[in-house]
Image (cartoon, rainbow, N blue to C red):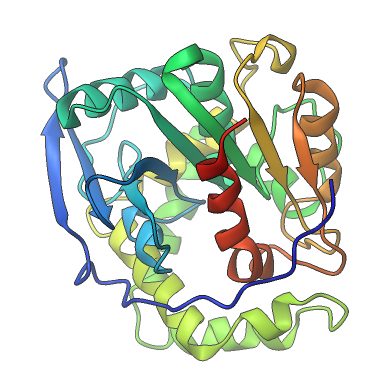
Length: 302
């Protein structure tokens, strides 16, 4: 697949000020699921699954014309109640209940980074009701090449130790709420490899948006990222080869957070997957430079 040219995007504030709605829906088991809607109601609905950590606010980072972006807080994040011992298979049922509540017969899904497994699970679960799915720099099945390496491997190891996971995610929650945290994000940028376009993408504005999303996701507790970390290391309840809806894979060659080998694993195992691996793009720049193309691909259909 030819790599499209990057398209500059306008950046709304990540505080929900441009959201058409920001509320919760009560699920069949009584839990609350938080979500935010951005864009015109009559446009193609796209459920956006945030990274680790993160929140529904990620769906409003960019002003994408012609689509309705619906950011969803996973259980334990933001406005969503925790879901004790949840599994990867539980999340598509939550999205099904939300889609029914919103009166959506068909929709698309996007999973970014830690949201990737949830987008894949929805692609398997929904069948024809799902228009298309996109996985951007996504984590994959625990046996995918690269899942045991560096930061991802640490996250999986963390998830298999409940006590350690609880302690460290709560420490993360405390630290990320401190005013000094923004300076720490600046240090992260300085340590990024210059070969990656992430260095250009991590502007002060984007850092502030990312930090606001993290703080919103963690404002009530650290149960969301702790349960995510556990789920990332658990065997999946389906095979990628059983996915039948159109899926596009987008992964930068210079992603220092999630190895590009995971993107190749998705591309090689999902039947008919359309894969794009832009040169020198990193974990952040793949979004800032290509989200318009990614959503455009969803809008265009098979």
